[in-house]
Image (spheres, rainbow, N blue to C red):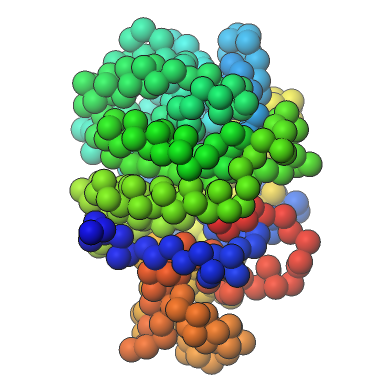
Amino acid sequence: MKNEATKHVVFDVDLIRRYDKSGPRYTSYPTAVQFQDDFSEADYKKVIGNSQQDNTGAPLSLYFHLPFCNTVCFYCACNKVVTKHRQRAAPYLQNLYQEIAMQAALFGKQRPVTQLHWGGGTPSFISNDEMTQLMAETGKHFFLLDDDSGEYSIEIDPREVGTGTISLLRSLGFNRASLGVQDFDAKVQKAVNRIQPEDITRTVLKDLRGHGFRSINLDLIYGLPFQSVRSFGETLNRIIDMDPDRLSVFNYAHLPTLFKPQRRINDADLPSAEEKLEILQLIIERLTAAGYQYIGMDHFAKPGDELALAQAQGSLYRNFQGYSTQADCDLVAMGITAIGKVGDCYVQNVRTIEEYDRIIATGHLPVTRGFLLGQDDKIRRHVITELMCHFRLDFAKLEKIEGINFYEYFSDEVATLNDMEKDGLLRLADNQLIVLPAGRLLIRNICMNFDRYLKQSKNQKFSRVI
């Protein structure tokens, strides 16, 4: 008998094959491909000024991009700097401190930081002293909480954890962590250049728990070279035994023309489309049987985890770090390529360290592009966010907030929704759109129906939805 939780996700192979195509992951709407190069530092400062007037004392979320990695993982599509030279981080951090001061001067120190995240790259690449100084510089300029009530998280490569690192991170205020694992199979690890023995991961996990980290996530990837249903099943056995609070299980998108490291992966070694589907089905069945809830997209969480609780309470949100519990925060992003959200604006920093250094040296913010949402964008963002986070859309709530009539405003989209309803992906009834269990894995397809920009351009490159 299947675990009761599996009723929330139905794996329908025929539907998946029919709807499997490329599409956005909707960590924002509009997506980053729509960001405009003529969005300037002056535009960003104006948006911040408006936010300060409208959100006096409202909480902030901070994101820091630390791009350095000791070795390159061949599957990686992140913006990173691969180097063995640890000293390369020092000048970058000095400029990051300057950006912290400039950003904080615009926001002031009255707004509490209820969420903070270090991502990368490999944040644990920098030394313990550098970690201490980075947090000290942050606290000097922003209102950091000292009562452990904030969600302060860090991405950790277990291979990069030195003596005393976990203890230090906890003392700095971190209480959540995400560990990269991907796969425990030795052949797979060798093929993607990420040799990470299981005992290293277990040791770091134990250390995190011993120091009172409240939520621990493990990252896995399916679709990597030499993976099979059998081999990934073994990895899942070990992962379930480790009992993390959350799991992110990503579909590997092989795009070697876009991401140079992926050219080191032999196409012939990748599992077939059919095998990937079988692996995905195994993931869903095994994790839900082990008591994890399917949050959406690639995420699973225990019922008591904050993500699951936020979803149950209708307060779950989605941003550039994935699912979040902090829907009302302005997101201030710092470091190269970092993407923030302030008010109804998205803003992104320059991509390279050279550009970053040059602009910071002039005393300016390293803004390279952004997007100011219009009314239609905000309406569609509301729809897509509700569907991505809660698998339902309340028309009355939408109409009250946005001042529209759903069926009139989305008259063109309703025809496609009716087709999806016939296929069993969703139900339109009782003045709401409800995503059915068979449609949850295809939530990106449902959201794509509301994406005005996707309909206008057919040349955008995204990963496959499954």
